[in-house]
Length: 216
Image (cartoon, rainbow, N blue to C red):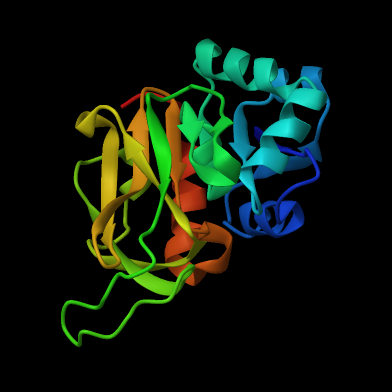
């Protein structure tokens, strides 16, 4: 049976993520925890996050979880970043006048422009980007198994990831501009959307994650 550690640093819809993992139909022991040994021992690890990146990173560092997340990544354990958890995996975010992040993936996090318009209607687009949108898979990956191309997932964010290496992009989404909605490298996978709020497609992604051994 898989053991899943949902990292608890006080920021994020932790229990919604845990409940979604439990409802995948895949037998797994899910634990919301900040215990370093439990996180390192888990077969799968999820780094969730909502809110301001500065506050998230401050708590991650205060609890010493930054080094633990790096150890998990280095050990080859399947690691999934969700929403701000994805942004935290990059090197730097422009949010809060600049915030250094974990640096697991090369790249930065930038704000959406405030004057973006819908190319079809010309209407100004609201920030944050909130609601359902299509996710276009740009490469094959075990986490896309049985998820249709351009499936819709639920988003809530004002900033987006810009990886330094285009090869990291696993999916894109359009909101006034194309942006990376999923990143992947080795045993690390990260999504800007919320699988736990994305109904069947989100549960399928979590199920795929629980089946994944961290290799491509």
